[in-house]
Length: 212
Image 1 (cartoon, rainbow, N blue to C red):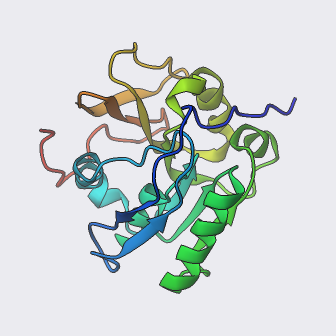
Image 2: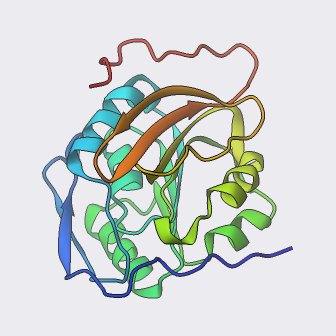
């Protein structure tokens, strides 16, 4: 059954601003972001740590960025070597901004923007499987319990899954067989990287720097 995700939480919109791609071919590029209710781009510090963890897995990766928002995670992944990315964002203004970023970066062959509710999109038959997925929904909506099981059919069996959630809340419940690889806590959020239960996997990414 199709499920519609609630709008990004928060009563007031953040002021328009920008996010910065911090590594790879587009390093230093600033991308304007519309002011939208509840928009909360992942901080530079957390993104730097996350992509240090993922560095060996990025070349050639197929990336899925649900609740893409500013696009900071999906575009950073492609900047650092991912082969392709799908950015799913239900807010029309944010999706239009993402499409403009893709055009500006000359990345249409590698990045697809989908203006759709994430849960409804996950309900559709998959047209390809991701090797890395980013799950950073609006915190106020409490979507992890429904999103994570719905995501599994879109993933390779041993995919890497990044989940961001409130620092003060218990960790989201995981699908069977997923295991925590690394995590980072800030005052506002818990950033965690998990690995799927695929056969022949290892639980470490050789060459990653230790978590701070």
